Image (cartoon, rainbow, N blue to C red; front, side):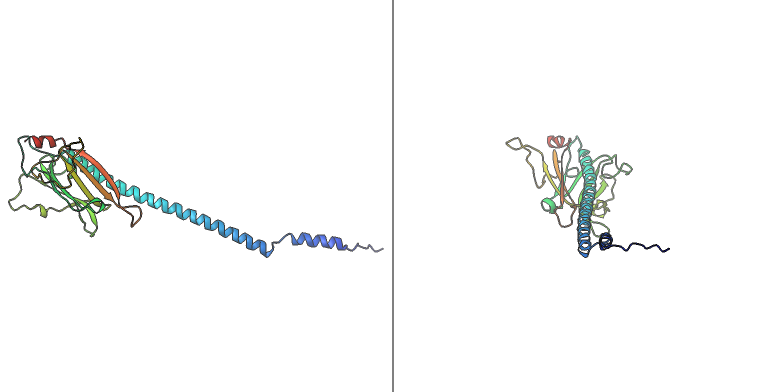
Amino acid sequence: MSIEHPSPSFETLGSAAERHSRRGFTLLEILLAVTIMGIVMTVTFMTFTAATTAWQKGTTLVDSLHHGDYVIQQLVMGLRSAYYPETGGDSKYGFVHEDDGDEASAEDTISWVKLGGAMIGRNSTFSETPHRVEFFLADDEEGERAAAVKAWRLQGQLEDFDPEDVDPVFLSKRVVGFNCRMAWELDEDGEIDWLDEWEETNKIPTVVEISLYVTPPVKGDDPVEMKRVVGLRVGALAWQQ
């Protein structure tokens, strides 16, 4: 006795073919998926690049501001510890200023007599005696412009001593500009009468405005300005002499 198996109908074959065709993708669907994936990857890369660039700019700016803040704090403490003898002074104790440019391109030089370890360190052998400091911009050992300071004691120097022979200490390469204004009185409107040049080298100002310019986060942009106004307590004493 033989058993006959029923032959598949055309309807059954059609359904099977249809189910089989649904298991794959057409060329159009593949191209569409690749295009969408490319767009997603491009947007992701652009977002990552923008975030990375912003992070780098922020890090550079914070680093520059940190360097600038350190230098400006040293200047503030140094100016506040300015020294002027009660018996009267002369050019040996006076404030010296050399004007060199304006705003970000300025490279002024200032020099004054002070006490204490500001700008020279408390371990210095002459920190507790009157000594002159000079702040300026100069090329460091690598030929890069940097904020620098010199210091030397007023007393006990050899006859042939020359401040030009004192080696500078470089504070920061991030400082690319320095501008200074001074004042000792108010104008007719009661405002500070700022001077771009200081000629009273046997006196010291009562207030000093210091402007530092530090490297920007993007090369080619304008330097970032940091400004402080400092009152010198011994300034009034100098003008009473």
